[in-house]
Length: 408
Ligand SMILES: Cc1cc2nc3c(=O)[nH]c(=O)nc-3n(C[C@H](O)[C@H](O)[C@H](O)COP(=O)(O)OP(=O)(O)OC[C@H]3O[C@@H](n4cnc5c(N)ncnc54)[C@H](O)[C@@H]3O)c2cc1C
Ligand code: HEM
Image 1 (cartoon, rainbow, N blue to C red):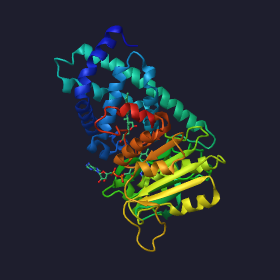
Image 2 (cartoon, rainbow, N blue to C red):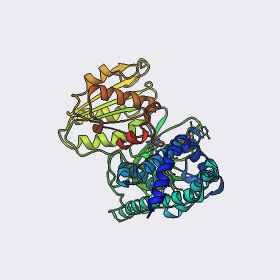
Image 3 (spheres, rainbow, N blue to C red):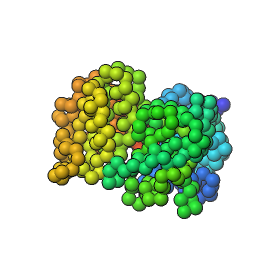
Image 4 (cartoon, protein in one colour):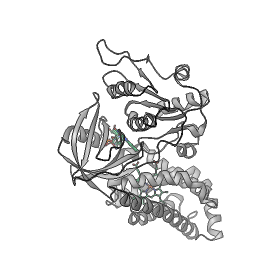
């Protein structure tokens, strides 16, 4: 429990963190990843290089410091962190490592004059309070996943039952448990964690579940990223019959309970969670569903066949396809439009502003979708999104990263 004096110190440190928060966490990551090889596999090096992960942590520390008197304000952010942590299997024994590095980084970045023993003690107590909150919430999720019918704890071996190319750069992997058992249902929109050893190095990545739950196995669909460690390994070195280590499903970007028309808008591989969500929404019966997908061109356009089949099976579905560049003669699907996202076009495809919208794609695409939906009048609480990486602000200029990330 923090003392009154410690709370005052934390609140007084907020302005310092606001100007130096990111430098602090960058320093912290360098120290932690350099000195503690046991936590290295959990962190995606590309997210460190881009600064996105240090920014996400800095944002959460700031948010925490601002709300030290009313931790319940952290609610949605805490849930988001817990989900990320669970999907990568962060464990209680990792917390002291992060705590020790954070405090050392505070001392080194702020200097002895500002980071007095009293300041460090206050931050130590504050970190412990936040760590206890997250450890408790994560334990509850791990226990729930282990206790759920056909659930499990930590890694479970899955065989790649089928590998199916979906486009020039996206391939689906159908995964079935090696133990022959069933698999826990997931909430459409959730993702799995994979643990792999590539060239002797352990790495972990998340992949969205791209088909509705069936109780027997899961499907993930992976885009080959130029220079990407795991996606290229999955495409090139993992064959049907091979085994992968899989962590149970997690994630808070899920279909909200609602009878409002559901709208899914995706760019590129961002289509994956929206496929599982749309399938679940279509199975709700007569709920109107609008599925809008943007792809660069016909070669990289994935799941056209799935949409065509759904359109035949579900009269409540309307679907639209946009290519950035025109389709070549003879290529499969003909797009409904060519070019970039356009508000007028989106408005004409939506059944009004009273919809639940879910969107995912590259960050500039998501910012454009969010702007367009806002202009159309879709309320904040009904515009939901997620990032295929650390949560970020949709618009760099706006200092609303944490607040908006909560909507995801
Ligand atoms: C919740 C969630 C769901 C996801 N769902 C999906 C999904 O359904 N399908 C999917 O395909 N992906 C999904 N992803 C993304 C996925 O987890 C991986 O991030 C993606 O496959 C890239 O991983 P990689 O190992 O291939 O690339 P990485 O090795 O992580 O590299 C990514 C990019 O960064 C560059 N890079 C790497 N290291 C550095 C460095 N040190 N400096 C500069 N640049 C560097 C690489 O060249 C590459 O372009 C999801 C992510 C999250 C968080
Ligand atoms: C109080 C302590 C902690 C806080 C406040 C915190 C906060 C965060 C935040 C805000 C994110 C980003 C969430 C998102 O993108 O949506 C994150 C991701 C992550 N955290 Fe933590 N975290 C803490 C402790 C830990 C510990 C102990 C570990 C394990 C060593 C850990 C490992 C990770 C990993 C691996 C990710 C994902 C990184 C990536 O995307 O590359 N965190 N955390």
